[in-house]
Length: 97
Image (cartoon, rainbow, N blue to C red):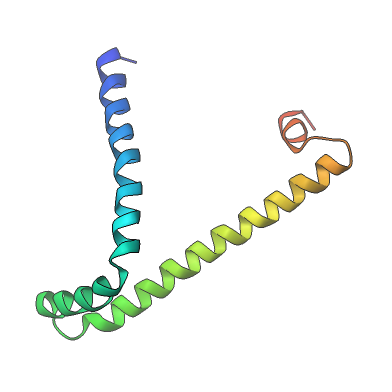
């Protein structure tokens, strides 16, 4: 792979990694204002039919996050059981069957 391409990809990924925490903090701190502003601006841009899409979109995002958390908890529990039995989940996944 070309070194220039690697450098561009590295800068792009680092900037993305730096922007996401800032976005998260902004949304967390301004959640009440966003809760009223986003539907109002969306209605102005797309009309009144957008409210159902916003509601379903928020529900889909919430369900996705809940699913990711559930899988992470289940994986952590499975890993914990493996450690208690004296094994390592990582070595079990990396070894050949």
